[in-house]
Length: 100
Image (tube, rainbow, N blue to C red; front, side, top):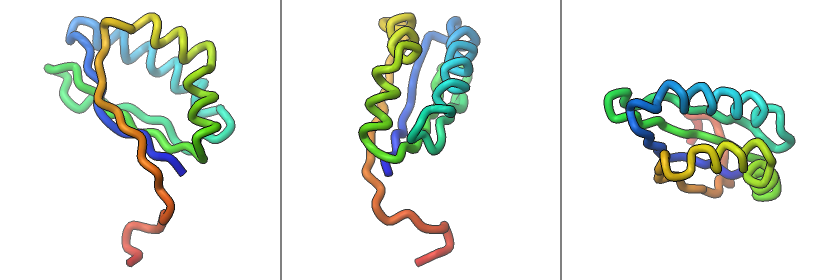
């Protein structure tokens, strides 16, 4: 499993529009093969910082998402108006929170 997590920043004046566009993308993304979860939450509205958290079954699923026409269009639409610090992590020992 891959975990994608980090922060995305936009101009505060663009936050509502960005969230609306991201919600549209999220609806489609959650239906994609290999997507386990795809979420974003406003972490700091004043700074227009969002926390991004995704889980994918593997690299092929994540790559297909990143190359999907709606994802490419979203990135093109927001390129130059968003910046992020988002990382990808391999997870090989998933278990319940209380498990050792």
